[in-house]
Length: 403
Image (cartoon, rainbow, N blue to C red):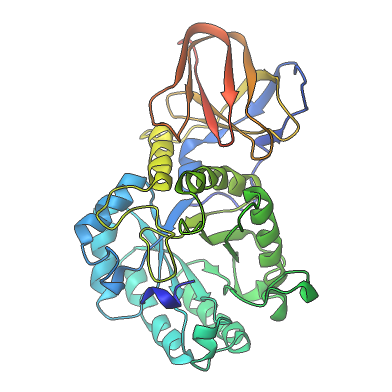
């Protein structure tokens, strides 16, 4: 998506640190390996259009503040003009973020020009990835003479350029071709296996009204592998147009997506987008830098997870009871030794679960990122706590007793 817009990653194979719990069971204590909250935060990113000089991007101070509010260190954009060589470093300096530079949607000449900017940006140390052509199967691009056959061949040049600069390369993306005749694979199945020219598959994931977030991520990840069979997937776009979706529902879905993406093996997930643009009302933030509900929820999440220390990933023994078959969990740890257990469910009605530990913890705090970044429930010197699992992720924070 974009034509109407005006112009440290997780390992490839994640350990099994999440789970689906047995319905209604009272589990014996199990010991689960955690990974660092830093690793989770490093999966999160957002799409920008810095050189549009519109929608809010015309004010770099507001743009930088909005990115910092979200707490994201990964940005996705397309350098299409010489002034991007100045704009991007300014934003990177203000936010500490690095970019995925994709080849913009449009003509073949535009893609070829975009590739010429990669080297200068890479030399400034602000790129994480280089990415192939963006949805060049859409009418906007095909009307300018582009095609998926040309873009798939161009992917070889993108790969060569990225690897010459020591940068991993993301596959081309697709935005059209969705019919029942090809099992709703879009055009992902039209280019063969581009694994030799991509380090990561590329999913553009836009759940429909009433669709399950996890199910949609799983489906688009499978589609992405049709075009890069052996590669892990990066979701370079995921979003909800609040002209169609209730903004609070979009916030819940965004939180689901954070953990569903990790559950389904995504290396990174870039939300579309920072501000509303010509593609629709997908923005996490308003043009004046104030948050929409989704932006506020993600800010709350990154605030709850924030950790300035060295990454740490130990293990925790615990049990959960009162769970349903559709509850999922993800265990993380902070540098302080504090554990954070995420529990979420996108299908069942809200229900109560009980967390039990083999020994009392100094503190157990429950957080709900929809409502804020302050604990909604607390217990001290306790070995159990019962809390509500609603229709979005909540976080049980376990502060161990100091040795």
